[in-house]
Structure formats: C-alpha cells, structure tokens
Length: 165
Image (cartoon, rainbow, N blue to C red):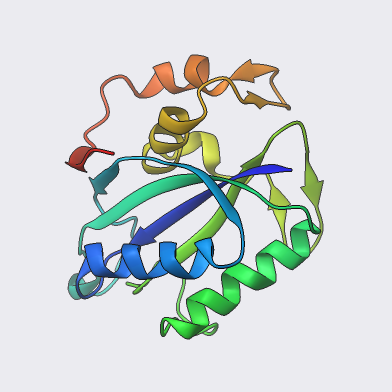
C-alpha cells in the first residue's frame, strides 16, 4: 500500500536529522519519492515557552509498505525513539524528529492510536504542500478530491523552500 509520511524537525542540525530519518526509513520500506524540504513556523499553543518558537524543516515521502498501519506506526515511533524523541514529550514542543502517517492511497483507518488520514492533514500547509509535490493525484477519500485540487487553498502559503529535490 502507498502511504505518505510527513517528516519534521526543529532541533539541532535539521538537514542531518532529516537524512538520518530517511536512512532509517529506507532500511525498512521502499521510498518511491521524496519532496523538497520546506521551512515553516512552529505551531504553538498560547503561552508556550518562547524558546519553543523555532522554525521547522518539513518534507514528505511516498512509500510502499505492505504490513498493517499499526505496524507502520510502531516502525516510525521506533525510528523517532532511536533518534532521541521521547514518547512523553509535551504537545507541540520542539523535537529532533517527528514522523507522521499523513494519508494512504484509497484507504482510511481510525482507532485510539492512529487516524489515517491524519486529522489535521488538510489544515497544515507544511504537510499538504510537500505531499502534493510527490503525489498530486492521490485522492483524499473523505472529499473525493485530489491533493493538487485541495492544495490550491494554500496558494498564498508562507512556506519557504529550503532544498529542492
């Protein structure tokens, strides 16, 4: 099955973090495409510590993975853990790496641990724009629209291109 995984980082050497995550991932799954890297503002809750306001680097990858969605989630969480991300981190706090299943081709899934598509996927330019770059024709099943048609709502996005692929 084809999945789009979102990758984000806002701590340390961001490019190195991304490359390390990609190396871990490609050892376990087939990566079909990798998007450009984009810079975005950190999403913060009101009254978050000022030092959390550190820009993220974000990208998306299109993969083929033939096991269950929960097995994929566990794989991504183990990569995050290997890279130093704690499972008990505070919501929206800075992180060395964040790996999210954004969407799967022609597939939805929901339980207490995982939602596919990601519940905020369509609301986050830093997720939707890189995903559209690598898989514009994937259909968002809930609306029957392609990613390219949905992404038009972000035509005035303030994402900064960091590195083209």
